Image (tube, rainbow, N blue to C red; front, side, top):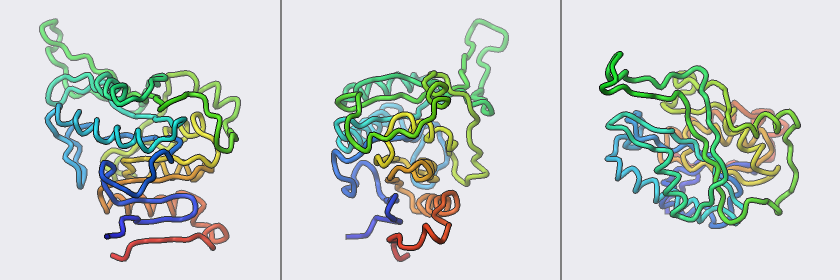
Length: 271
């Protein structure tokens, strides 16, 4: 069997595999999932078709969300960064449709955070200019839908929270305003900023919990988990993104400090 564990140490693991079919993550083992799945708006990923028929996209969404549901512990939570809607290929209520799929699978709904990306405009068309005939209304925001598996209250794990009073007060307000991330700077077509997983991880998990990103991309969730004393697993179908994530993790965390790097068990596939 081909080794699909691309990189591993005591705190995190990168898996080069398809989240839907991977067998390398135990069921009922994940405390928190923080992810931003493909948006199906024709983003040019290396190994993913981001221009599916909308019904096919929803079928794909059901499959990966169902797999992730099985991976979550009973007290596990999901922070799902998705569009409010989209207008490429026709207007679609993406956020509402995916939330409905989550409920059908068995996730329980907790809340929705509105992320106002201060530096990103979602405008791609005006519709009918200065006319009521067919104007487009486009909101420059994204959603972070917060769901859970069986029960909302967490009573297991370390029970240690590291969130400050100021962070708790600010982040429990469901309107988050911070800038998006630069595609050019990161080298990935759809990165999100460290601030997003940082807030989700500190607000919704305990120290030493296991955090999963099933669409790891450039590894932002894993960096944030490591820097905030959580364990993490990232899955990506594309080997180039696994390499990008590995390099960002080594350069963006204290793994590159010799005294912390020594003694870690590192496993990397031979290319």
